[in-house]
Amino acid sequence: MLKKKYLGIGFIILIACAVFLLYVLKIGPFGGSAYKPVEQATTSISNKQADEKKKLTIMEVLRLGYEEAKKHTEEEPLLISLTSTDDTTVPQGKTDGADGKRNAWNLQFGNKKGNINVTISFKDGKVDSEVKRDDNNSLQKGQYAISDIKIDSPEVVKKAIEVLGMRPGNPEIKDDWIKGYHFSIMGFITDPNSSESRYLLRVMGISPTSPNSENDSLRMTVFFDVKTGEIFNASEMTGYDKDGRTNWKDVLLKKAGNK
Image (cartoon, rainbow, N blue to C red):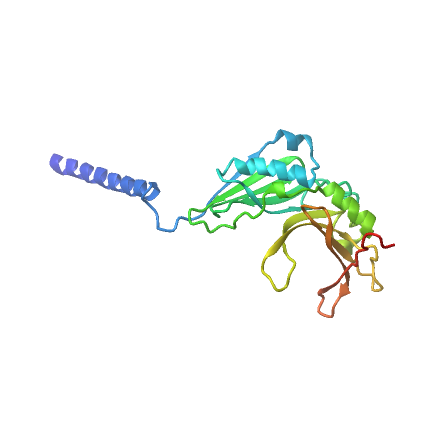
């Protein structure tokens, strides 16, 4: 009986060791499948500069975001996209963005390899960062160095207002759907015959001709070259077609010397 008892204990210990060994092999450097899944981590960081300034311009957001992205990659962080948003606990009004500052921003950085993606959000002075890693380099690659950006949101929104009469989205007008002025930087396809994108800063607001005869709110977008600050293109809504899709037209820009 005693011999059988010890045999039983030994068998249990053997099973436990086998389970432990399988676990170690699974998580160890040689475990897992050939395709390593994307690793994802979310962190909430406190940045003194961001905490002290709840409203930020594009350049302020880019610099803070760049410093955060640098913590997660040895390569140069390259911008994928940046956009302002109404996703904030602070009530937004039609004056928001008139000075080029917003309470909430989202931006993404990557690198040339495509093995890391850093998504950062600034909201009411707080910063959240989500990091994805993939050894198979299947993540969206970063495209643009922030040093390429020579303009900031205060100057471009001022030009959109003064040159084109852009108005802010009014929360009291339901169809305006945006509040104040909004901003984004990313690659835009500007040539229908090419898949190559151009790096532009977009200001979004309401057309000075809004509303139209059918009382539709008419949005306006103005695109700026990030290196020169010149207006690349401006367009405004004219209304909706029978299927509910928006119709747009280009706004003719006055050339220098024309009155």
